[in-house]
Image 1 (tube, rainbow, N blue to C red):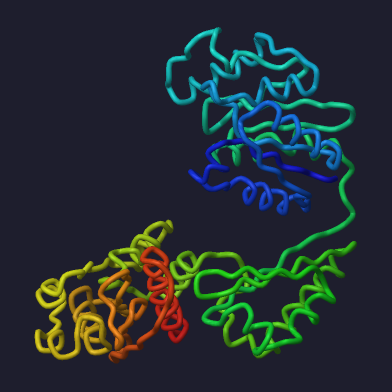
Image 2: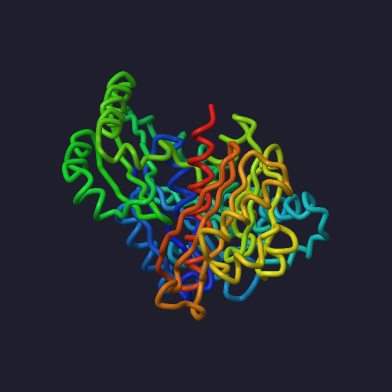
Length: 418
């Protein structure tokens, strides 16, 4: 079964928002042992939607669309699809009932029968939207299938989860091919160095068992291998051989996870498992480490908090950094980072205290300490140490990279605990 995605929305092509639904559909299909074949993005214009549909239907058995089902004038997906298929849009009792139900779910008054949600292209089925208001749409056309969902990511996701299997997957014979994607996450070594210096045979070795991909991430690289087999035993054997290649490669020392958890998720999981408490003293990152950790459910079990010590007076008054340290070594220094982490450890009484201080720019740098310099301090197991690193990028990129460095340091320390 070949599945294509048509993303509809001016806001995506104008750079106002990022497309999240390609990733959501890919992950969802992988869970069903299916693959996304191709994707297109078009503006909210009937002619462009027609071109996109024509291209996808010529290649795919199933076309999924995302976006343009709302009530405003720029939402033209429904009418464009109808005209592409040579069908008319008319009032539909079933669509009216679905729309009413969607509104009732959120205790909102329904606008009435003249609302656009009550109108449906001929031959389409209206689908309930468990997380929003706009009904989804489904139809069959010349032995091929069209499933239309809202562009809002959570609504698009619920459309897939609630309706995809019932309306599409069950109409095709089950595939005899088994598929599994292995993701190996590495840190602190760039992509070209992994495959050029660390292990220049790695890609070819992995390619014997499946398609290989490489995705640079913040201070790391995700290496993926998609393996296929006709039987479960064959799939497991291939997976075992792929993992053996990684474990016996020089890259093994840079691997921090086999899986797809974010660094935040992985830290929360490990800290909770080992019951080790931690916190941050954040200067240049302005609370970004804490923000990332507190995005993860369950973090409150071991994450105690943070001190955002942007000004030197806070470093002195709250964390106990010596005035002489700041004067003689500067706010961005190994000595200051150590005293920040030590002060945080005493203030929060945590197992691991991480401190971050640096220069995110664009101004404030010097020849000795250029923009992108940052220092990490850590107090753990009764010892305090520090390290200095250098990154490149604009202010936003540097803040993210500084926080990533701090999280990697925290992860490495957690790994030291039994």
